[in-house]
Length: 521
Image (cartoon, rainbow, N blue to C red):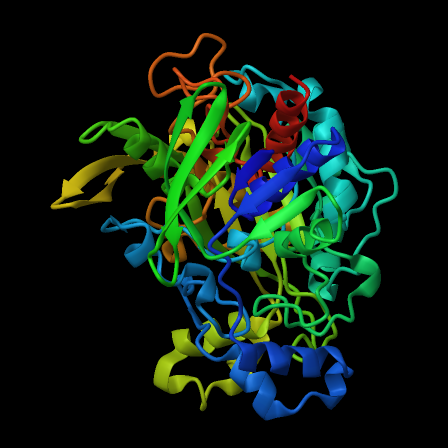
């Protein structure tokens, strides 16, 4: 029996790789889910067309998610915070000025992710002991169960699709306008290191009804959630899922792995035995389990981050009617900056067009003048884009993680470690955007640049990095921490660095690779 700990994207992908070898999988998971009453409302919406949705039900499922000039608050699913609930009680951790939060939910953070799917350039993962060629078939295996909404375009030159028949989403009219602006100047922008195209999302495009609810949750289940993969695997003979399990420690003995934990609700002790164990609990819980299992108290690990920042882009031409347009509200376009004058690594930009959250942020910016200046606010919404940026971990802040005793218990302490290079790189990005404003057809607004705290983009990992010759608190190419032979970390914990492009796709491909290769040993 192979035991996978965690049901997020890495756990689901790892389990898929193991099952493809014909081995048996037991998945242990805390397994929190959406509250029954909210789930009932979601089912009601899914059974009707958006035009028939009761306004009161819709308001309930949107409640709690707000936006302002600094972006959105912690992203919820259908108005619920269940993806983040109970973590400080069940897996004690604390950290000021840290934007990252673990999850005990079935599906982990895929309940609230942005579903962006882009692999990495070879130059951005030069320090990894595995490369894109090693991961290629595993990227493809991942897209087979996540789906991929994508368009064949210039991005393929550096970022293969790993999917034979992608189905594109219909872009918003604002996105089409910006893409036309960029395409008119394609040759010049390429000379400046720009590569751009339509976003790639783990979305079933053929089922999308363009209701604009993406940021709150999709009632029709179009956005990939690894909980769906877990449920699908549960229909097979070789897979078992056990919820309400909090894993606390692991040990190897006699060619077996012994797993200790407790019941999430009753706190009653639990134990399991497996041939191999795969840690896919998320970067905070996985580090905590490894440190506790090795009694490595007061030992500091360094969690790497891909710095997340955002700024507005205002086009010269407006797109009337954005408030009533039928559209999806996830990322619409990708821009990759591959220019050594800006950064030694790629800079990844995700472009968002209108959503009601952007409208909400505009109205809050106007404050008490929002009502008298309603016409001005509307015209601004028709020109406004939000740009989310990510840097390579080499140019980003990081997070110290230290497991400390707290009486009979312990707690993982997190501390932000600023990187002075971060702001310099981001300001070079904005200067480049200003220099290209004629080709963008608009202008960015540097005074409204927002830097987020480390971890806020949820693109973190690398605390037990893979190495060809691992030392203590490093892992081998199969994610096995130094000193262990049957325990594998498979989430972003083992990535040697965090590239700027989307982290989940490569984490899933690597987890699938580890599951596939180790199950065949």
